[in-house]
Image 1 (cartoon, rainbow, N blue to C red):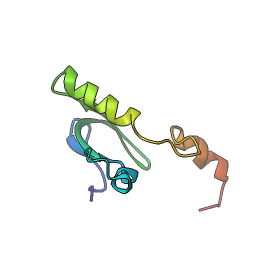
Image 2: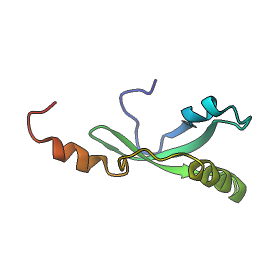
Image 3: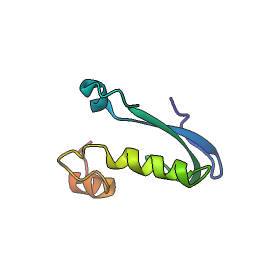
Length: 90
């Protein structure tokens, strides 16, 4: 569980997990740990810059992400979804 806020410059460990991989029983790791440095805080969280030890760590991260299955909706712009809800729709 993350604290309510982080200061810029804080280093955090982030675990990415592919939940569908456990169902497939492929024998491959279904999670990957990376470090990130907090750049700024926003109303609903914080923004990070990923930190890699070397090019091979960056490559493993990209390969892990490219192997994930995408959901139906585009999750890359959460601000658009929040704005679409309109005022007073919590």
